[in-house]
Length: 129
Image: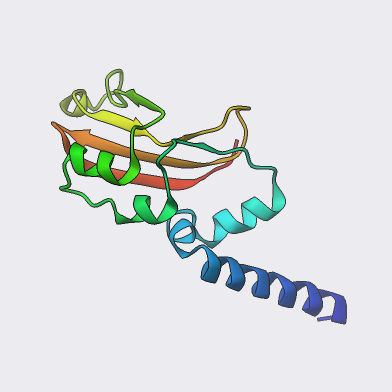
């Protein structure tokens, strides 16, 4: 490898290490690939008022909706993610959307799915549009 490639690779590794250290909760959901996408693309994430990465990371399957709301506050929107899909056994699920992209571009997606008021799934990743 030439010196320039080694230098760029070294800088990248150091930056990713810093991101992992400074934002471990966010990186656990978005992964290192999410941090790389964040460096490469413009991101536009709007979060709900009570949202924190640490709080989102603490949400677990089996918690009640009330527990989620105490930790993260009210979501930006509520919706039925499976209503018009082939997964009709999940048509009653309610999705709590804690992030969105106001400009319809790349963002950090954060959702909690409830099955009869109980957390059934926690979804978080870096969405590339």
